[in-house]
Image (cartoon, rainbow, N blue to C red; front, side, top):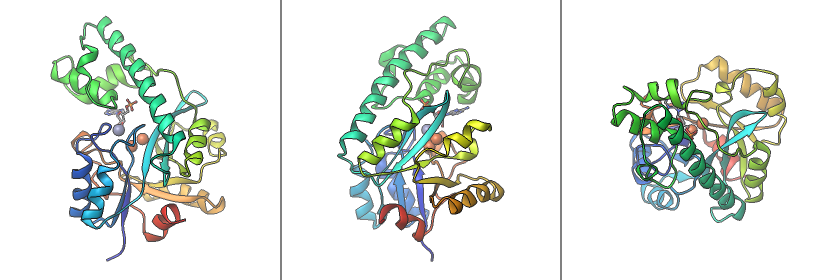
Length: 266
Ligand code: AMP
Ligand code: ZN
Ligand code: FE
Ligand code: FE
């Protein structure tokens, strides 16, 4: 059997539905050899994940998915192979926690104007994102589905959306590098097309997430070619969130041993 590692996985430390422990054993169950957990703006899933991966006999490399802004656009940056006690990574996670607290308060204020009432105390967890708010909106009967919560209220530019103080893509890359990590542009397939993307990819990324969820082969080819021409590393993963995104099954996208080692052994 050939080696497979899923390098884009979320847990309950951010907006996934499985705990770090459950994620590791699920990876084992679906036949993966390695993984990286990439929660939004937090590394809280480690070290539990490291302990469980050791027990399960799986390879694991450190990971995170930072939210950032470039040219007024939202850009997700994956960081890999950084030191978990790296001061710049920890500092960036702290800044995001503050950004999110402020942003979530603004979203709740906006929802109040639409006669949807959620108290700040109802947002529980170390890292609260829009999916948590959407979930409460469904539970309280304000909307029928999570999807409706996003398309009508919480999605970018929608009625109740708030960004909070943005953190730039450039400073995100700096923080990852300063903690000894490598930066990857996450799911380029999902970026809004435009000349800004050409500028974005000139930033000092170490690689690109060429394999993503169930993207079609044609869409991967473009990015694989770009990586080959520019000596960039390749990453890939499912963006697994458990029940929160049922179509992204763990291992539906993955990298081989060579790509894994280039990121985590290089
Ligand atoms: P946040 O990190 O708080 O900005 O929220 C981003 C998260 O919201 C991502 O993990 C997405 O999976 C989720 N999300 C974004 N748009 C939608 C949508 N239309 N439906 C469901 N989830 C979404
Ligand atoms: Zn998410
Ligand atoms: Fe993302
Ligand atoms: Fe993700």
